[in-house]
Amino acid sequence: MARTEDPRTAPPIRWGIIGAGGIAGHFAQSVAYHTRAQVVAVGSRNRDRAERFATANHIPTAHTSYRDLVEDPHVDVVYVATPHSEHRTHALQAIRAGKHVLVEKAFTRNRAEAQEVFDAAAAAGVFVMEAMWTRFLPHVAALHQIIDAGEIGEIVNLRADHGQFFAYDPKHRLYAPELAGGALLDLGVYPISWAHDFLGVPASVHALGQLTETNVDGQVSVIAEYGPRQLATLFTTLWAKTPTTSSISGTEGHVRVAGDFYGPTSFRVTRRDGRCWTFDQPVTEGLQYEAAEVSRCIAEGRTQSERMTWQATLDVMGTLDEVRRQIKVAYPGEQR
Image (cartoon, rainbow, N blue to C red):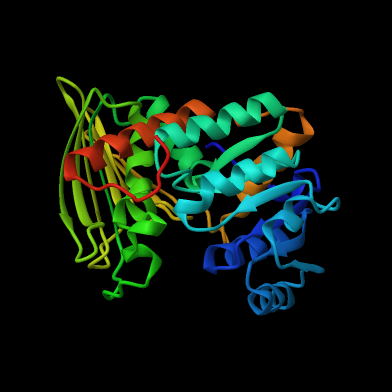
């Protein structure tokens, strides 16, 4: 069975974090406890928030401007953990400062913005990657191995859901159009990227969505077609905590991935001939695997990850764009 490399074997590197929210805290803890890297600085426009985050996560430097963070000579790579509306701006700011960049998913608001970031990275010769941590987890590596080995035959259907309950609050980032809120970019990116990972780019996409009072997507159902015998059925919502599971069914069997499918978890293989077995490799945290990938790629002089290529991100952003076009969701200020 495939084994993912221990994140502790990745070369040490110095991280700076833009944004001091919840996901940034998880990332800082994962790096500190499960890699040889260090988070040496955090940047936030709010001084108190920056200092509290730095204290809570044992980070030596708290900057009160993003410019100071990206220009900090002790920072090798910047993790962008701000709202989706700011990803393009902050990634470009870090690239202009000569820093490598890891950008939280969804990478940008749309494909055009993602292309702009990658073009800038190519010109500067720096590493950039979307922080789709799922692609680097042990159970995903194992799942690819059993599918590639033909254990479930030809894939016929992939199903995945990601829903979380968020009470309506027009000031919350997920309900705010100006912050590129909605279920799709924050939650739905997981099942869509999951389908891309196992099936590739769909030939066609059919989406149905329901909007919130602020005109961002509250929930979305997507059917992605890959050929005459292959579909993905995907769902996301802000209005309910769903099972957050996935199943992949093929001509010789199926796999059930336990919730949360996008984080460290287990899966069970059931073959048509009656054989069954389970993969379960307990993992603490999980964000350390993507952090280790960044460290390895930078140490090797690469500008992109083979596991999460620039083209893979562009393909996912293209699907998200098409879904938004069909459900009629646009964000103020997005670059086209």
